[in-house]
Length: 385
Image (cartoon, rainbow, N blue to C red; front, top):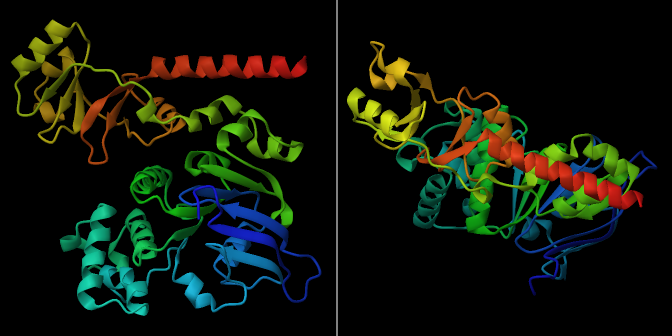
C-alpha cells in the first residue's frame, strides 16, 4: 500500500436502524489516508458518531462495503478488525475498580501478551502521556483529574499499538484550559507516532486545529465538503459550509498557524536563585520596564518591575504572577485568546515541561491578523470581478 492509497475506505456504506425508513448514514463514500488525522465535523445528529462506529463495526452496515488495508472486512470477524483499531470516547469509559495499569493493559491482555511485555508497554505509555508510572500505575480512575483520565483513555487505546485510532469527541468532557493542553499534547504525540486517526467533533475550531483533512457532514453523513482546513476556509463549497464555518474567517485562519511557526522574541530574564541587585542591573542594562523571573527549572513565574523590587516580598512572590503561557503546538488563535488576559502584552512560550522558550508579543499577532484580513479582502475582491 502506497502513501496515497486509503488505509480505510467506505464504499456506499449505509446504516438504517430498525423501525426507521430514513438512513442514519446514506450511501457514504469516504477514504482515510495512512498517517493522517481526518476530522468528521457537523451539527448534532448528522451521523458523525454512527460513521465512526461503522468503521470498526461496533454497529453493522445495512448496505455497502468497508475496506481496511485493501481487504473487504464487511463479512469477516469484526473482533479481528477491532484489534487493529483503538477507540477513545468522550466519557473515557475507564473501569473504576481496575488500576490505571490494569485499564491500559486491557487490550494487550485480550490479544495474549505476556505479563512482562504488557507491564513494559504500560510504563512506556504512561511516560509518553506525561504521567510518572511509579506514581500513577497503581492508582484508580477516581483518583485522577478529568484531563488525566482522558490521557489514560488515549494510552489504553494505544496499548496494543493499533494501526488506527477512532476518537469520538475525545476532549469534550474537560474544561477549556485542559482541552487546549490535551489537544496540544495529542498533536505532539501524533508527530512521533504517525497513527491514522478519524476524529469526531462538533466544533469547527477544533476540527481546523486537529485535522490534516476535514469532512463537513450534513444530515445522514452526506459530505458537504472534504478537503484540507486551508482549502475549506479559502473556498467553502456551499451555503451550508459557509453557515457552518460561521463568521470570523480571519480568526479561524489563525487556527491554521501554530506558535512554533512564529519567531519568538527574547526579553530580559533572571533565573533563581538571584538577588534584587541583579534584577536592577538587568533592568538598567536592558532599558526594559519588566524582567521575567524564572525558577530553577526555567519555568516563568513572576513579572518584576522597579516597584516590585521596592516591596517587602521575596522575589518569587513579588511583582505580577505569570498568568499567560503558550506552547509550540498552540494555534495562534489559542495564543491570542490567552494573551488578551496578559497584564504585560506578551505570552511566555514554554515547552511541554513548562520551561521558557521566549515570548510572543501581542503586536506580532495583530500584524498577522492584519495580513490575514488583507488577504481575505483581496480574495473577496477577486471573486467579485
